[in-house]
Image (tube, rainbow, N blue to C red):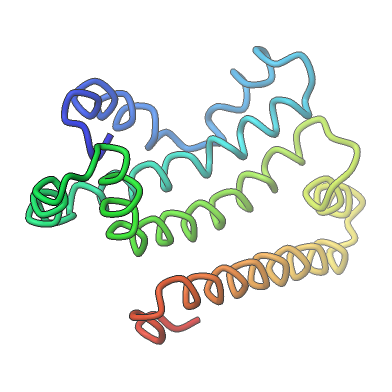
Length: 173
C-alpha cells in the first residue's frame, strides 16, 4: 500500500473506513460469521493488530525519501529489492510503532473477547470473579494481564533496540 500508488488508491479507503472501528464493535459480527467462538476470537485479535501495523507500515514506506528509490533504480535494483532493502528498512521505526500499538490493542481485545462465551482465559477469570463479587481476584487478574503485556512490550523494545541500533535509547521503556 505504501509503495505502490495504485494499490494504495484502492486499499487506503478500505483501511480508513474499516480500521478505526473499535475491535469490540466487531464482536457480534464475528460471533455470527465464524463457527466457533475460538475462531471469532482469533479473528478479532488479529484484526486488532492488523490496523495499526498496516497503517504505520504504509506510512513509514510512504515517508521513505524518493531519492533512495531513485538511487537504487540507477544501480539496477529490481522492485522486490527496493521493497525489501530500501522501503522496509526505512520504515522499520514506524513498523515497530505499529507493532507496539497492535500489541496493546490485542490485549484489550483479548480481555473483551474472553468475556464473551469463553470458559477459560484471563478475561473469563476476571469476569467470573466480578460475578461472584471477589474483587481481589479481579484486581489480581488485571495485574497479571498488565505484567504480561509489560513483559511482551519490554521484549519488543529489546528486539527493536537490537534491529534499530542507530535509534537505541531514543524511546525508552
